[in-house]
Image 1 (cartoon, helix red, strand yellow):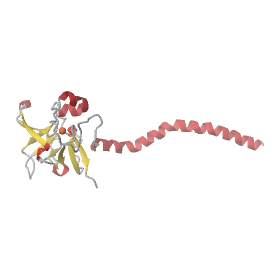
Image 2: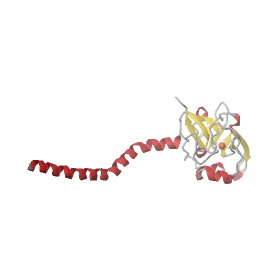
Image 3: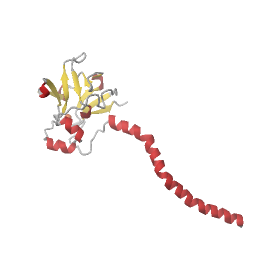
Image 4: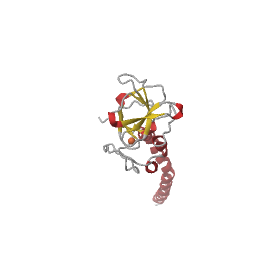
Length: 195
Ligand code: FE
């Protein structure tokens, strides 16, 4: 009986110890799981966009209807960073954009409205500090307008669907077009080609 009693006591002690152990280890276990998967998820989230954007009802990869919305509307549906470039024509810092050295095979879309803009085939390595392309995916993907700000004479590139400022185009690009579409990464979304 003594042996059985001792055994029972140990069993009684083990149960709360096991619960305590699990409670103490739970945060560590969860942190371990997060640590194992977060970097990969983070990379995917930063480079590959979703086909829909919660909070932006105007975003579509298939609807090509032209959008003519006031900045007050865009201010509500775009992130602050995208809004500053797309609607306020700011330029992201050179060599800071996520797509500068990105070599994924796929398509680039306007981050404000989802309009198809460029194919990765038209992207080329450039030293200017911003992702560069030699042609848009189709002629009406983008519009052009003169830009004389900052004492320069440049050609501004805007989204053909929503009018977002995307960057500028220059005549010092590679063949076959000789054009260099110098884009801000923050206003581009990327979707890889399917298998
Ligand atoms: Fe757009």
